[in-house]
Length: 378
Image (cartoon, helix red, strand yellow):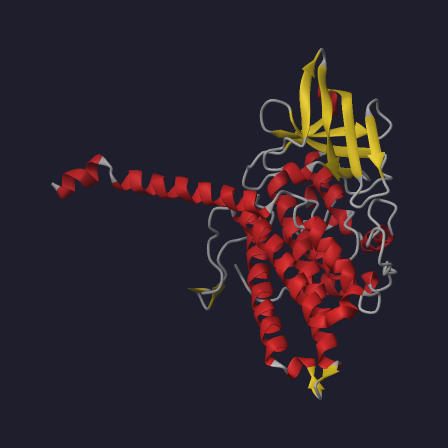
């Protein structure tokens, strides 16, 4: 993985920050902290930049920039405390689903049991209560399990048995024996290394990373001019040291997120991951990629915990003003609370990572006990 900043990535990030700076912030202390969905103010910024084409392969008219570009978009949306309408469209593009839809039921992953699909003649009946990205979307892309792996099912908002509670945030979608057929299944949400779910997890991890970075930036700026006990807050070790440790955590999380995106791009042959050479010698920074394995799940679990911890620390460092509209930190706090479990609870994700590590250790141990090795020992 080449750690040298990509000039194109820098320009994309700069363009996103410029565009998102013009999105009005919802600084009210009550109600939703962001406006999500296809009709939100973020959509105009993304459309103006042509963000939908960043990840799309060149073969279908896109720019072929890979998942790394999608991670940059997601990170900047979180950093600006904006709604994330990009993730639903990106996942729909990966699976060939409808654009402008809202995701629902992803908090139950990786089990996928938030919405149960009971068999019926010609299809299934969906039953359950889950959270959704946006209340006004005409179509919901629902994560459910139909007997095997979790699948993504497109359900019209006005279908029979579908109810939406828009007054709470995140919005809640209810399904009461909602009939669907095989034609409604958009695709599988399996754990393939470079599959749609792995890509969606890394976009969400980048979004959580951006939320943590945005809150940390506000806190650092505030303690730089706020004076207490005759000195600036940042000059007090009890304030500056935890913020410095948080910066280290942010950089470690950033490395995990973008390494995961790079691995997925390499596995899907989206980008060229061959080692660079300088004067006919291999470049020491870049190397052949490892297997993707559980890198997306690890990045998501790490980013979820980072968002929780860093946003909480930022609130504490800024004092009571963090809970007012003066700083706007409360928006990041509420975003972190909702988004850190949007794609599954971090504890469940870490158990998945741990189980994979145990299986790998047992496989290595079993290969070491091969007959050839045993004969050599004798």
